Image 1 (cartoon, rainbow, N blue to C red):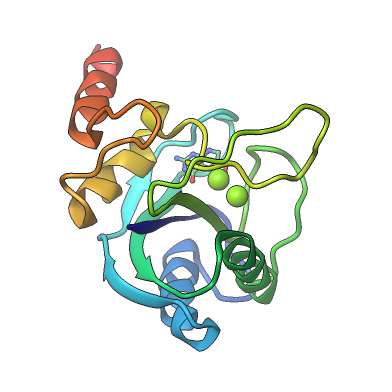
Image 2 (cartoon, rainbow, N blue to C red):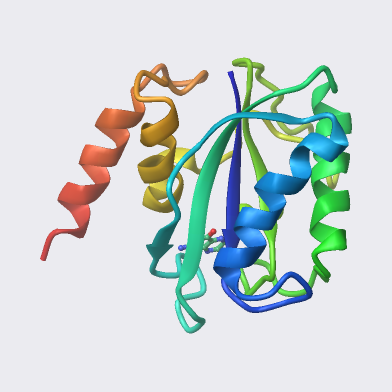
Length: 163
Ligand code: PH2
Ligand code: MG
Ligand code: MG
């Protein structure tokens, strides 16, 4: 299963965050990416850099014959179409498209190689803004490295966040 996480927290060329996320999903078929299922849109508190607007997040289950590196390039193309500039790490963004899982493929970072695709996307288990929408489209999904179910990861996070 191929899963893409979408996020936006500032208005850009494609409008407000909700519009940008929906437009990104609508645009994917023009780039040889078929959207099999899309989650609802979640409004989420910013993770990492907390002093920024809330995000709109979603997850799409997609099908494509593009290999992972090409798919990632295509996602970057769509980000650019939406007017994305790459500035601050974890900072505000008009559109962020992250490749979460590519059919269970494991690509770990090699020492000294920057900008290399890592699969599965690192940090999924710590991010409720990915796990929540992911569970809507892939309730049985398991992390390819840890084999932990998304359900269990999500439950653990809810427990940690409880006041
Ligand atoms: N993306 C980030 C950093 N923090 N927080 C939320 N809630 N949603 C995101 O998509 C997000 C974030 C970097 O890509
Ligand atoms: Mg991201
Ligand atoms: Mg990204």
